[in-house]
Length: 70
Image 1 (cartoon, rainbow, N blue to C red):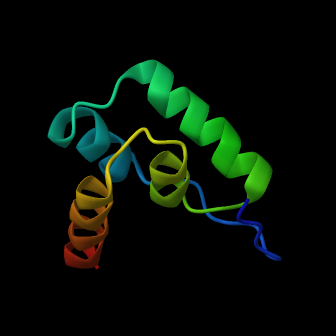
Image 2 (spheres, rainbow, N blue to C red; image 1 turned 90 degrees about the vertical axis):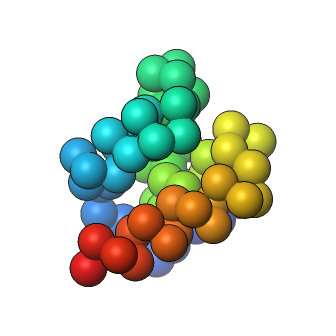
């Protein structure tokens, strides 16, 4: 379990769109990930990977996508 000491910001609408459209993540997978990320105060992509909802390669794609958004 990943637990942060400070509240994590919620995922951006762009990230959610990327996860749905770019990776084809289902709404139920996103809902589970969002709930668990909030409980753990952990980044959504990491939670999705830890729960096996995205592969390590997909996690890398998400992190690369996020880096390009800044």
